[in-house]
Length: 175
Image (cartoon, rainbow, N blue to C red; front, side, top):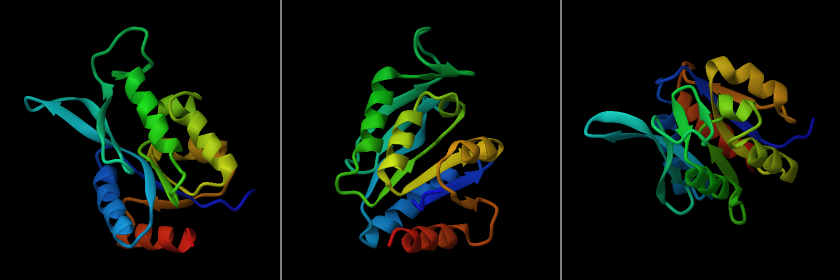
C-alpha cells in the first residue's frame, strides 16, 4: 500500500463531526497549514432543515449542495437530492490542490460508495498522493476503508481528546 496520509474522522450521525472539523480546520490554518476541500453544513429555512450547503475551505464561498427536495434526474440517496451545480463546485473545491497541503472531504457517504459523488475526485487525489482528511459515518467506515488504496489513520468522535488527537495526527502526518 502507498504511504499517502489519509485521515478519517468517523462517528454516528449528529455526533458533531462537522463542528469538530470547523474547529480543527481553523486551528490548522492558524498554524499555517494550507487547506482545500469542503465542509457540508446543515441548511435551514424558517427553522426547518432543508439540506446541506457546501463551504469551500480555500475560497470561503458557501453554495447549495444537497436538498431534501429536488428534481427526479438529480443524483439522490434516500431523501437527499444532490444539486448538479453544487456537486460540480464541490468537486472543484476538492481538486483545487495547487497550494494545499491537505484536502478535506465532508463527507463520503452512500453516494460515494456507489462510485458517484466525490468518489472520482477522491480516487484522483489518492493517485496524486495528496493528503486527505475524510469524514465518514461509523456504519460506512469498513466499506470505505475496503475501497481505499492506502491504510488510513482513523479518528473516532468518542475517543478522548479527539480535537487534540486529530489536529496532532494531521500535523505530524503531513510533515
